[in-house]
Amino acid sequence: MSISRRQFLSWVSLFATTTGIGFTNSTLAGFATNQTGDAFDFSFEELIKQAKQLAHNTYQAPPKPDAHVLDEIDWENHGKIQFDTDHALFANGPGQFPISFFHQGRFFRVPVRMFVLDSNESTTQAKEILYNSHLFTMPENSPARRLTSPAAFAGFRIQESRLNNTAQLNWRTNDWAAFLGASYFRAIGDEYQYGLSARGVAVNVVVEGVQEEFPDFTHFYFVPPEDNSDSMIIYALLDGPSITGAYRFKITRRHEVIMEIENHLFLRKDIHRLGLAPMTSMYWFSEKDKKTAEDWRPAVHDSDGLMLWTGQDEHVWRPLNNPSGIQISSFVDNHPKGYGLMQRERRFSEYQDAVHYEKRPSLWLEPLGDWGEGAVQLVELHTSEELYDNMVTMWVPKEKARAGQSFHLNYRLYWQADYPFPLPLAEVCRTSIGRGGEPGVSRPPEAHKFMVEFHGDIFSTLPPNTDPFADLWTSRGRFDLIYVERVPDGKPNQWRIIFDLILPKQDKGDPVELRLTLKSQGKVISETWVYQYLLS
Image (cartoon, rainbow, N blue to C red; front, top):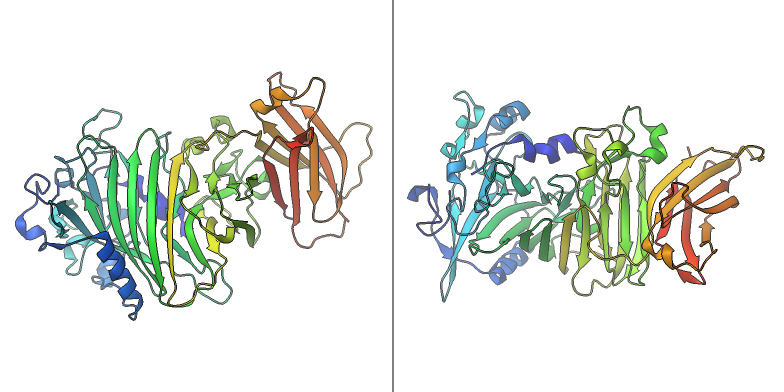
């Protein structure tokens, strides 16, 4: 779980250039015949069968090239290796999005095999794109030149359109989706920024006495797209000690990025915590808990909250925490309608950072079909800096994950700034915590003050001279000094709730669970604010 954000997620922007490959004469432009393998029949159904068969066999890790040479390809040397843009897959078409490849190195050791597909009326065939160091530009003394078989690619990324090429979005220097390392992948949002990541699967995240596994995407198959299409279709094979899988990705580039994913997973071994459709992000601190961070910036995070749309049609907002250790929250559900790690703070002034956290995409997941019973689990790990992704959220089925079982999921991922659907309720836009106080009002020393701010057009439908009702709940302690008021900034449709949580002074036990919903005339008019208050 200690995945370095700068070292594992920001690599995409380290490589300024990209990649001519394919299958027919046009799509294989730039490749000699000895740089592609022999053709063989391919179908998604056969890939699923291959994954299922693998699960019946003992796991064998992919062979890797010389470990000592890989170790020499550190961050500095890896950053000097760039794919030659003249050799990009689909650089001359078909389609508008060329594909470039990443080189192996110290931090990307697993070889990943790449294939391009070609279809006619009766069959689809695959041909492997063979690794060759000449496809990359690198210094003469680069240790990568000493790599021998089975050297391969480490991952790939999808470049911006070659048909709509501009100085601002030059396809050779700008990409919009990337797959690199284990089963991690990510995309930019409508603000043209990378941020959090998704994963193909999560295996045994934070299970006491059990080491987490990171299965790998070992094979990718690229479908040549239509020239006027804004989508790419990519197939992938996943393999790991406890699980195998076959994936189909339909990845669409509009102003935002949308991914439709189908997977078929097969278990080799029992898995204590099987995380399906996981996503991972970084949360260090925000305004509500800046006391935990020694930093000059007001906030540092790629996501600031977990959003849920439950099978019971409840909308939930859970602000993220940076705990002193490990916290796991489980939101039991049946037929969930969606969940995501969201970035709601969207002003530069909230971060004051040139890396522009305010432009990081939110990631919303929409289940396609019935996911049954289970729980959205949120794992929060401590971090003392912004270098690590310390947040994980995933769907954990109620059914035990036993060897021999299989799972099949369909879902859609939205990489964009905001929630992708109209929200008919007021949404939480700010959570603040502190001591506070009012002149002349006596407050006990064990009081903890909260302020939760809501925005929404639904407030304009309130009856005249009527305030929303704050429905509050706590797992322990009691509430005092509850105020419901308009935000005094002169802007419409903004309300805040201020209250004290009174806890015994000696109470230093488990976190306190809090819930708040705004109602009017007995009807819910807001998201449910759910918070886990960590006592120091």
